[in-house]
Image (cartoon, rainbow, N blue to C red; front, side, top):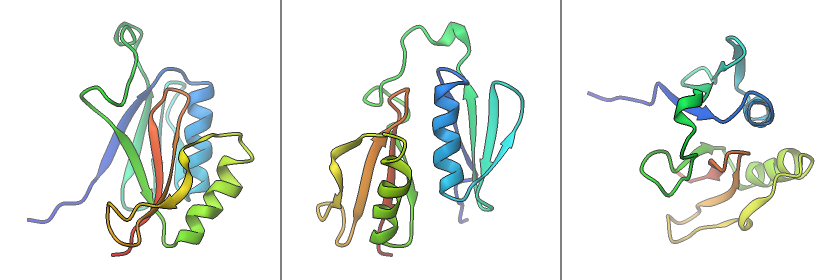
Length: 134
């Protein structure tokens, strides 16, 4: 049996700033954003999708941290190093989204040719745009 990722669900703190952040990123990366009420939307790339929801009030007590058990980060693969750099200049810089770890750069310790940029959403969920040779 061979499986692929069907969808990933993420919970955000609010439907304002956090939703705008994710809609901007996902639209830029070519996902179709499908509105589904004021506290949820889906984003589909034709192969898989993200389910994005607002965290219910009674679950917000401890907040989120990627170092705790659960989601660490979400990575979006692009087809070249140039596209990683393009995401920085066209998506991150105009929106004043700060990069982590010194910006876009190679990570040869992962695999030869690995090139990525990392950043965080308003809830501190880490996002990666990566080129990884297959």
